[in-house]
Amino acid sequence: MAALAKTMTLLLVAMALHGVFLGAVYNVGDSAGWTIGHVDYQTWVSSKNFIVGDSLVFDYNNKFHNVKQVSEQDFETCNATSPIATHTTGSDTVTLKKLGNYYFLCGFQGHCEAGQRIQLVVGQPPRRPMPPTQLISDASASSEFTTFSFAIAFTALFC
Ligand code: CU1
Image 1 (tube, rainbow, N blue to C red):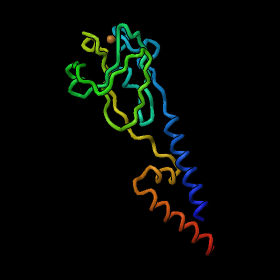
Image 2: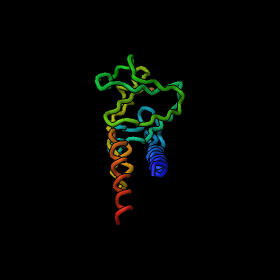
Image 3: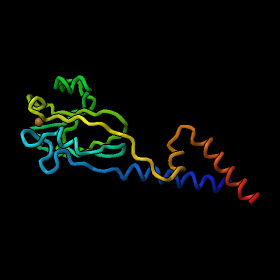
Image 4: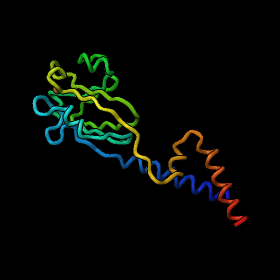
C-alpha cells in the first residue's frame, strides 16, 4: 500500500507540474510587439484572462526599448529607476508565477509616458474536476492524502 501511495503521489505531482508548464503564452501587443505608438496595451490586456503559469513574451528592438517590472507606485509615476526585474534581450519571456498585479514599463526616456506600459492581474487557474491534483497543491496535502489512502484501503478490505 505504501509503495502504491508513493507511486500515486509521484504521478499526481507530475500531473500538477505538467499543468503548470501548459500555461498560455501571450505575445505582448500581438504582431506589433512591445513598442510605442502602435498598441494600446490596456486594450490589449482587457481581452485577456491571465492565470498562474501563463507567460508573456515581449518582442522589441533592444536598441530602443527594454522591459522593467515595477511596483504599482512606480508604474503610476513612470519611474524606471528601482525595478523589481529588468529584461533587455529583445525577446523576453516572463512567466506569471504568482497571483496578483503585475506592472511593466519601458525604461527608455519618455516611452512609459507615451503609453509603453502594461498593467495586468493574474488570477487562479480554474478548478479542474480532479480532486487529488487539488490536494497536492494544498499545504496539508500529505495528511489529507494519507486519509484518502486509508479510505481506499478500508473500502478494499470491507467491500
Ligand atoms: Cu521603449
